[in-house]
Length: 60
Image 1 (tube, rainbow, N blue to C red):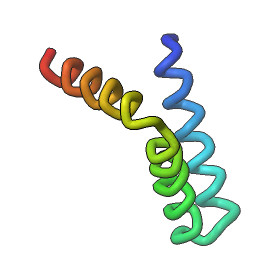
Image 2 (cartoon, rainbow, N blue to C red; image 1 turned 135 degrees about the vertical axis):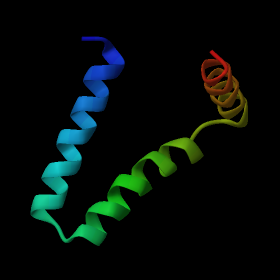
Image 3 (cartoon, rainbow, N blue to C red; image 1 turned 60 degrees about the vertical axis):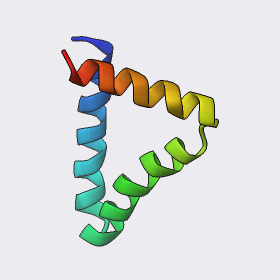
């Protein structure tokens, strides 16, 4: 299993646990808010690099 697959599986497991323990709207806010906050915490140069890599992978 690749590193990205392990991260994705962990994210799915965390999402399911959040949905079980919290109301759905709180779990939704956490699942959307954490990645958004992490993206906004990046420097502008890191954001450009991330967007460039993402577009290059989409073009494959």
